[in-house]
Length: 270
Image (cartoon, rainbow, N blue to C red; front, side, top):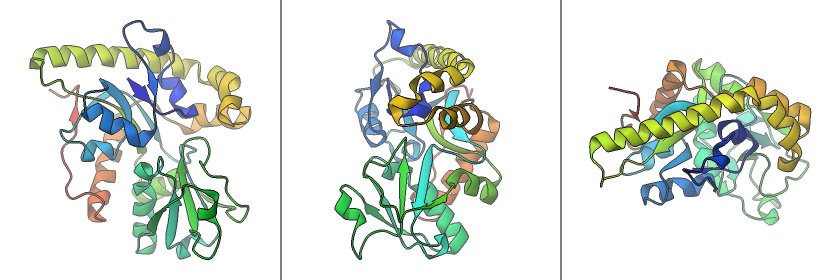
């Protein structure tokens, strides 16, 4: 199993590192989908856009997710200009897979989507051609931001105002093993679901403690981390989160980020 190395992931993996039956890896968001599709992973905490990009598509465990229903710290956008005038959006390679939320919000709010430019070195944020805004996922940008990027746009809050549904950033996705019979795949999925569900319950109960102890390792101050893990981030996957996923995929298709919208296979569906 694999997860991204971010603070917000910790309540979902509480105790999993001590499970003798599995190996838990940390990996970049953009890399896990390819490894899951190739059979190098059994499960991964994937950015949700990957559910529509992988072939064959994975199945989703409904025991846990990373989501917000309002302001969020899971993804961030900072700008040096008024948001309505943003035409070029920078993102580091590991954050690009999450960037469709920003593309959709700009297209819906301002009638056009910003061009996406890769940010890989400090020089990419200097000079006449520097992006108007920078998007990043996780705990901090991979490239230090100049002070002029001071205006913060909370994408979770903007999504909620636009759609009136939560935004789901990541879900546990599993690969269906083609060498196993359907009953064996279902049993395997059920076992994984029990593991991640139990880990989520432990982590949610200990979220404040996790933030207090581990926040500094991820570059957070403790009060902000406690607020983010206990108030701003949702970890239970509900019917409203399904609606949020459906809305996201529909809008991604409308704005040509997806060629089509494929049905999502949920493990608990009959």
